[in-house]
Image 1 (cartoon, helix red, strand yellow):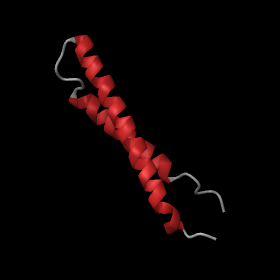
Image 2 (cartoon, one colour):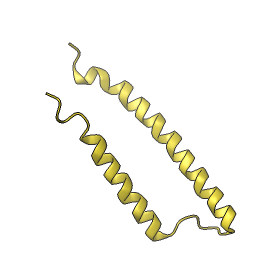
Image 3 (spheres, rainbow, N blue to C red):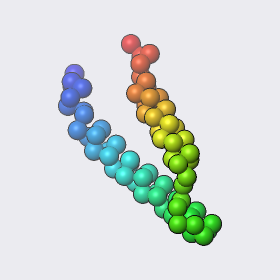
Length: 70
């Protein structure tokens, strides 16, 4: 049986790649939205706070994956 550490590097690499792709996609959408509206600022402070809280909630959910399986 493999230990958890043996699998950690591939998981971290894949997670980093997925995170970078999602971040690029989000940036692209924000830039297009700003261009469509004719504004230079893509998101407001309130929207940024809301997105930050949503990301924290998502990370919490990911951290809870597989907790009930034993």
